[in-house]
Image (tube, rainbow, N blue to C red):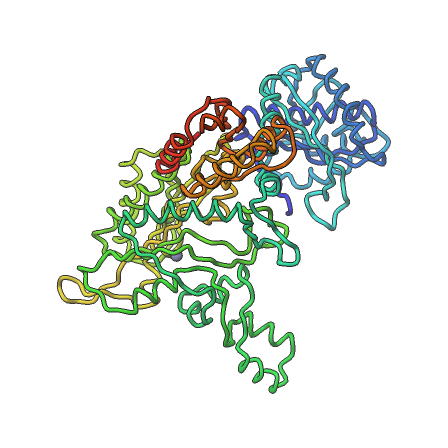
Length: 625
Ligand SMILES: [Zn+2]
Ligand SMILES: [Zn+2]
């Protein structure tokens, strides 16, 4: 991506931490120049989680060099140099850069070429400022901390390469990344957080726990749910279905492909064809084109213009649900109609953006469409929010917020009347206020067809995940000419609500793996109980217990390996089974089981019957650990 120079105003908007980190970039340059005085520095802005500085240097920086630079940086911080700002004329600045003195510890034989170039980007009416700490002078708009000693703790983290100004036609520079905090404790907490995130990474855990697989031969971004992952997905779907049923939804099934004309009517094709798999061309259409001597480039144009017959892997479920609604006449008395489907859709994501379950090319939305009257909007939106809160509560996601996407009042590019929009926006605002969720209003973030709500959830280690949305839609009912007969006997367009609160099963499951760090609550755990006879002698008793558990509908597994009991327990723990039943002579004689839980360790012995009863209650109530 090409980088644009930040305006002076944008720079002054730096947070305190960004200012500290940017100041640390100056310290990095100071320290590095003490080792390689000839280095040519380009830009050194703060970025998310730290800062970088780009530089040109014949010596190729290696990880060991970072340690050496850090030693020099620590000296610069210890020297507690003040950052001094001076304002100079353009002429003076050019003079200094020509003498190699910008981004440098003093005059050098070669000019500071990048600084000279950056000077040309500064508009005539903008003040040109230099910042000096110790011997180091840099062209910079600031701001900085008062002194180098204000940088409490820092670490250089990595080396990369980057084109000057992000443009591939420019020279390639070396980039050093680092991070800095006010205190050492904050720096340590940051790295501990990174470690924890790595430990929880759903790609790593998914492989280790045998939940899902991505196979190059199947295709990138296409998830294979392995048996254990499939159990989690089925349990999630059952849970959501139960809640939908309570709220009066009807479940439907629709095909994975539909005619291009359907998606032309909905507007999904060809307007969004960049983010879709290419259409499947009908054999007749293809033959006709071949007979006409159509070339590949002509075919590509037909696909692009959409001027072709065929089918599309569905990028959205809405048009299918609309056709179900339209398949029978409706009176206002029938509304609202709520159609739900775990509907699989396909989108063409760039391969560079694919990773694990969170960016995929095929995914199953927990989708539903509500067709209702304007008067019913409030109740329906409240219902959608209630469902979301129920689910968040069940998974112990206690921290979440809502973003309210409103229309851009300056724009005329929206469907529906201003009165409808006013009502819809008021409905969304009232609904989130009533449930007391923290929310932010974001004008200009609405879709052109209606305002929306986005959910942002914090997981087990306070990282934010954007999940699904609830959107009001005035557009599709018009495009498909949907209608119901109102109480005045006149036909009216219903309002449509799209809602997929969790986005997709893939993304939600990926998030849950990280949220629970793989230790799923018993109701979701692919393996709920592991039966561990302490030796071969008790495997017969083990089989009896296993049968009892399986007959009670529990997911249990018997470890018949020759390993010592300690090793068996460790393995079960590693594989995150919520319960272990250890069986030896005493247990067999008493007809009991010795219970170990993942959470509490040894829980003593009890009858198998009592254990089954207890765990069934835990599952039924979908208790958390
Ligand atoms: Zn600066
Ligand atoms: Zn939809």
